Image (tube, rainbow, N blue to C red; front, side, top):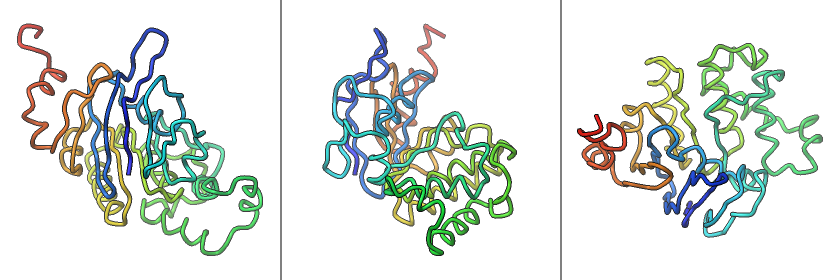
Amino acid sequence: MLELRRLTKYFGGVRAVDGVDLTVAEGEILGLIGPNGSGKSTIINLICGLFPLTDGEVVFRGTDISTLPPHERVALGIARTFQNIRLFGQLTVWQNLWVAQKARGQGRGFLRGWLGGSRHDRVAIDKTLDFFDLGHKRDELAGNLAFGEQRRLEFARAFAAKPSLLLLDEPAAGMNAEEIDQLDARIRQLRREGVTIVLIEHHVELVMSVTDRIAVLNFGQKIAEGTPAEIQTNPLVREAYLGTQTAA
């Protein structure tokens, strides 16, 4: 479904992403892990078109989308959450999902879709809110939600865009153990419904639990790739996270 070819991004003299090759198969849950500053979120921003590439290609379903603007990538079926929550705080919970749903493919008809819209669309939003346990919050302003609820709403908003590829940037950040268990179950359910997922996460237990395959970044480069079991025993991964004995 997704192929990154020699993906490269410089910020001035800093190589945030340095020649990364990576593929994501349809129906897969791929984990993307690494120390802080290793380039994980930058890769998500490059896939979504938020940052322009310095070099390389982003190929989605066989088509090079490297120069497409973000809204056209959403229309193709790519949605994401953000590491730092970016909700529409002055809109209600329900309206946040409505915006996401209408943003995919509406173009100049967006306002018309906002004012009207089909009953089917409205029912779909209500079902999504129920799935993320937010139905009882539908009329509250997003900015008034508790932190865990805001995390769930951002996840729900991304799913409301009807993606085939969903990019999750640290969705478990700030969640308690019960909320993480619920997140685990929702990720598995979305995969059963045909959504392909790329998961950036520092919560190692969650990553090891739900992913089929993991890629590890360090200093902008991919240093390892494999199954969760293979990654746990990889010496390069251990060194990246823990440092060598001498350095320690």
